[in-house]
Amino acid sequence: MACKGLKFGIITAVLLGVAVVSQAQTSGGSTINQLAPEDRAAVIGLMHTFMPRTTFEGLMQQVRDEMFTQVNDFARRQNKSLPSDASERMQRAVRNSVSYEEIVTLTAEAYMKHFSPDEIRQIADFYNTSVGRKLARVQPEIMGDIMPKITNNINARVLEAMRKEGLVVQTASRQ
Image 1 (tube, helix red, strand yellow):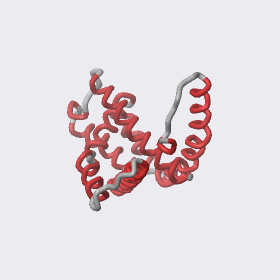
Image 2 (cartoon, one colour):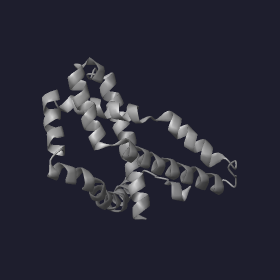
Image 3 (cartoon, helix red, strand yellow):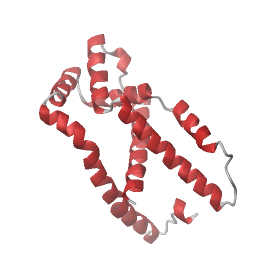
Image 4 (tube, helix red, strand yellow):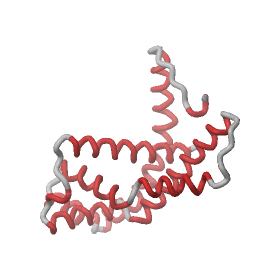
């Protein structure tokens, strides 16, 4: 249950993050390409520190697996079967829809809204210290501790409050 909650939290965070950054871009936010080359390199470098390609690939695999499980469960509830190659097709669809470079750029632009290039360099300097490297290493574990609590506790309370307000919420498990 905790693992599913973590995956749901990751999926939600990624989708919300992309939505927020997309909104910022359409609201006149600065773009990474407007920076001086050395500033752009500093921002992109920090984003690579936050999320190395291998971490991104692992997260995307979790997203693809969770999406496929949900699609498969939905089809089963509808008494339908998916094509035998549905998993591979889902993998390709997601892989072709979201790139590492795109997520790095979107994340960098979100950081640029809040931090100057000099502040970005200071953050990068921190992540090059022993404490910064430890934070980067244990942050996923910390999120793993937090997300199930959020998913299990807060979501249940929000759903109950919505029901009390007369809003009918149909979750995937109830469809």
